Length: 459
Image 1 (cartoon, rainbow, N blue to C red):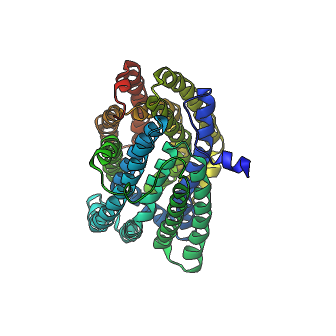
Image 2 (image 1 turned 90 degrees about the horizontal axis):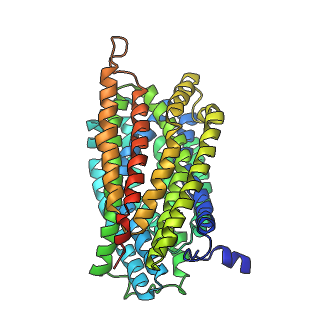
Image 3 (image 1 turned 60 degrees about the vertical axis):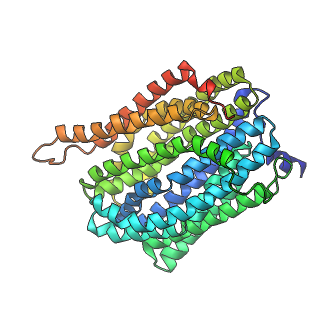
């Protein structure tokens, strides 16, 4: 019992070897992110195997719109993680309690907004993106189901952000494993037994996310030794709500910009037809796993920097940034190598079409080296965000996606048009993404070295 209590206790990152604390926090969060990635992956595998390649394309085409409309959740979650980690590091119980209470209030507001707006704009957006008519109804059905049941997604994201800010990455892992197993079972029940198709996998995801949110809420309710969750704290407070929004909004805007760029590029992707859309879905699913170490280390660096900035230990932040980035690069390199070696087998999980497997593997080989660059970008961006500087990563993201990636994708496709390839070479879409990642990593390294992030701590 004592061992379990220690395992699930928050990690205080203000003492000890930085790399050990970062790794201790990252490993369970990485496993949790793998479990979360299984949501979309299992959805894709089930519809690809049991419904068909067009259904697989439909689930993938829904992704950019879903990501665009959940930016509020992303923003509040990041704001929650930063404010909670800094107040936890500063040992300020009252401010910590107010921050957590206001996160809950903001989550309720965001859930209602996304549910209403999502249902209204889904089909017009899909039509605007020239989504093939063969998958339009499936995309609409999938998104409507997810948005109507979006409260589970919202509360899981925000409550797990609070847990991460407190240094607890193990609880979120445990709850996600439970939810992921439930999601897999429900996918098979709804699609194979009840023949619900794309809507079935959406419903399975909604139910599983709601369960994980309830488990996170129960865990927070039991952590009374660190903060108070009384009625007086779970109400709108201008100061704390403003801090959460101020710190989280740039991350939400970043997510929105990335989603908008994906939507713009999705329109270009759609021009290559259903098979390339399906290949893009497969690559993005595998890409999701390849990116997990980078995102996990980035989040760990946010918590590490937040707690140590709260404690005033800036020298320790710099030391942890160096050690954490080296760890992230090493892990990312190993996982990228494994994907290149076993990638064809991974692609075959999603489809029975050999041509689709070959096309997907070709695109993944283009992206490979970019994952190491993204390890640097995510780690150093995480440090800046944790210190309270969320604007710099936002501007870098705008530069990377809007100024570099989108024009490159369209420009390269235009320049490679031939009578045989009227839309250009399809691999240009992935080459442009690789170039954007490399440039983003270089710019992030320069911004971190300049050190403006050291002056952005929460007041």
